[in-house]
Image 1 (cartoon, rainbow, N blue to C red):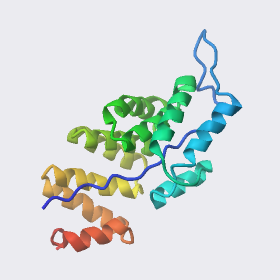
Image 2: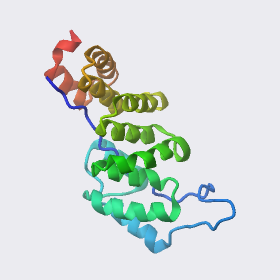
Image 3: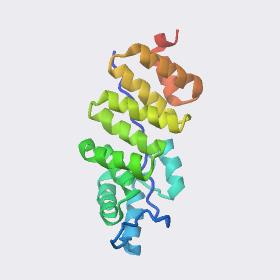
Length: 202
């Protein structure tokens, strides 16, 4: 039996402009989007809510709302990325992941995770891109990196087990999923796993 791993609906966060110097490039001008361009980006993010509780929670961090349209988001995030780079790479890369354009998203997300915003959410999207490209070892590494940075990242735990399962590494999958269910017993995926493949918990 094949259980597809759960790819989280993780949002394109990081659209706010910060004054920490991240746009500064030596001997070059600083490109900051105009108020009109920033508003266009914010308007686009309104189309990315309501995919999951995780998405809704992260959107509260940046104030986006309404429905979902990853094509519109990709257009606006690419414009922002071309103008300012930096943290906009996460936004663009995440949109590309949802559009199944992972060969495009991966180098952008890798730079994001290593250089611009090396946090659990960045590594999670790197893992998603690798997983969709069938790059199992790299996906496992990135999911483990996300968990290392944020041990309570529930979807990273469940997805990691899914990667092992789909690679027919049943013992590794069972070990990870048992840990995930013990750590997040009320999560919807904990209930799903115990219902559909209960034998691994015996």
